[in-house]
Length: 338
Image 1 (cartoon, helix red, strand yellow):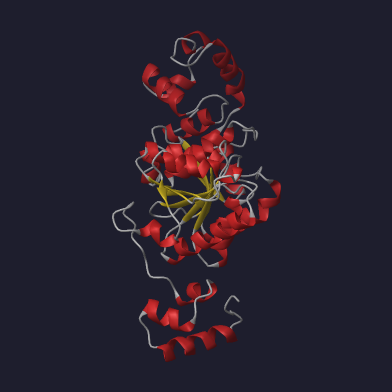
Image 2 (cartoon, rainbow, N blue to C red):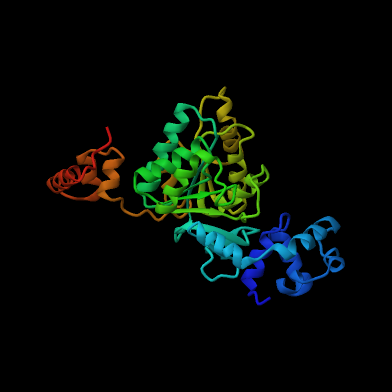
């Protein structure tokens, strides 16, 4: 067949029900994924975590799966496939107890983990405003904004990062072709141009509810800390926070009115030890998460609505130089947000 080890990994990832833990079990049992791929049904049923049903399903699918075709499918979407066997697999994802064995990537991954901004799909106006406000500071500090492309808080964070020219990463609960929700397809395309859209799901994987809890662990893997903006008691954002705590990362939670059901999750996290935050600067307090802020650009500061005097102070530039630069930007059609 002539496949290399990474191609066997891609092929196994196309089989529903075979994820990171079962791949490890297969490799340990047979000595290599190549040997596991060619193993007969009876031998497969002897592997820990692989029962008769999954072994039968794999044997039925095996003849139709081709990693080379999968790589061509990804390339047709402008994406590349990374595997755990690749040297350039992002090291921050290797921190996860079960890193995604295969990652489909449109765009460019950030060199360092960023800050995850997550929350409810049905936020209040205050929640949306807070998502945008905190995202501004993350972008101005030069860090990537990580979220899940969902409606509500996720969407607001991605959009504000794009508006400011920042880097943002969208982690999907679907494969790269079946963007979910469908109305965010254009948003995903913009994110891929200014950051990355990533998924662990193959071309064969349907979009089902069970995908999204798996997606949440990857969001945490891309982050140095998780900000929960607004979340109910059963919000998926709490699962992302759980993954972050397992990794020893910071978890920040914005409090609200105690009778607000959209803040129940936030208050639960605070009771469990999450850091209560009321200002974006608190995400960058020395010693919390090891943030390495980078100086913002003049364009980003103006896009965020900072005054000329504030920009001059932040960039340590003479006010006359800042005003001259502002005039140049306005000529180019870049105006300060009202």
